[in-house]
Amino acid sequence: ESQKKLERNNEFLVNALSSVVEFRSSESGEHVKRVRTYTGIILQYLKMMYPEYGITNERMKMIVNASALHDIGKISIPDNILLKPGIHTREEFEIMKTHTIKGCEILERFKQEENEFYRYCYEICRYHHERYDGKGYPDYLTGEEIPIWAQVVSIVDVFDALVSRRVYKMAYSKEEAERMILDGECGAFSPKIIDCFERAKPELFALADRKFLPDIR
Image (cartoon, rainbow, N blue to C red):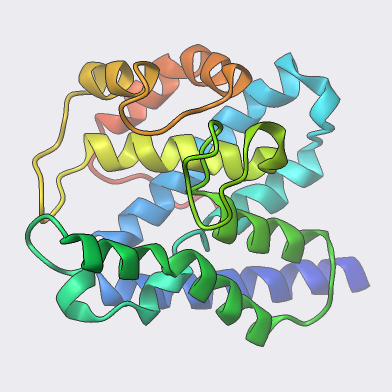
């Protein structure tokens, strides 16, 4: 019963905080739903192909929920930067990058206890812009220093950003998005994550054709 109560509290926290991001940007709400859905798909392949990561059904549920908070730090970014209808300047981009750190600071304020779910939330929020080659941010982690759940959210975040229309760009086709990811134009990903992405491609492509995804809570 105590475990179910904790899960309900976690779900309430996720829903509340992710809703705040949605109100800041009209595109963020659907983006959060798609990231959750895509994350669940990739995790299924990770569990099946790479059991060494210990991805269980219970962990998958927690990671999917935690993925909804990957961009929570964007609520601290000024509107003139977050909603800018154009490419960011170098200075603006440096401010945008702080959403990873700001997000973790927000999570700290809402933390009820140190547990596995909180760790997933924190590590996804902080590390989903790290790159496998060490050229990401904010901590310049390399390879398997990046938690695998953050790596999963990283690739689905990039995929959704590419195939979605944003205020500063038109949407790319699914095929072009795939090419850009495989060619390393949008970050560096581990061979295992790329393998899972390629295996999941039919499902990802099919869902990307739908404007809205059902919430999987």
